[in-house]
Length: 107
Image (cartoon, rainbow, N blue to C red; front, side, top):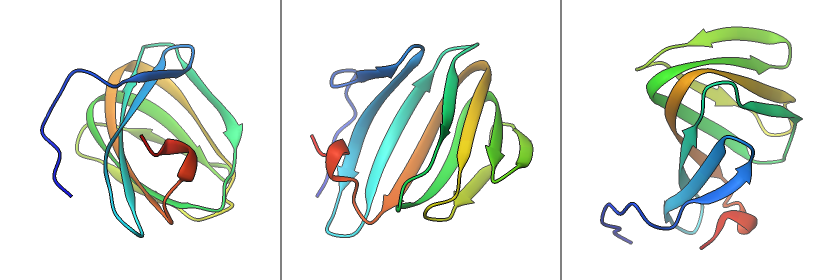
């Protein structure tokens, strides 16, 4: 699968948090998140492993009680079922890959 860049297709999932599935295969799914300063991703968990990369901005990421200040170029991996949440400190763009595919994120 190949997908060309587009400004269309973003969905508001929480206040200040928009997402768009960029591409997916049989085992992984890649999502772009546009995050507004001050937005909060509440504590949650899911069975999917989640790896991410911060393209721009600054976020505070809490993974199972381990809080990290995340800056552009930093990356992370969240194990399946790990409790995590985030505070968006500056307007940010993050790319994340989920495995297995999150069915609810399919276009």
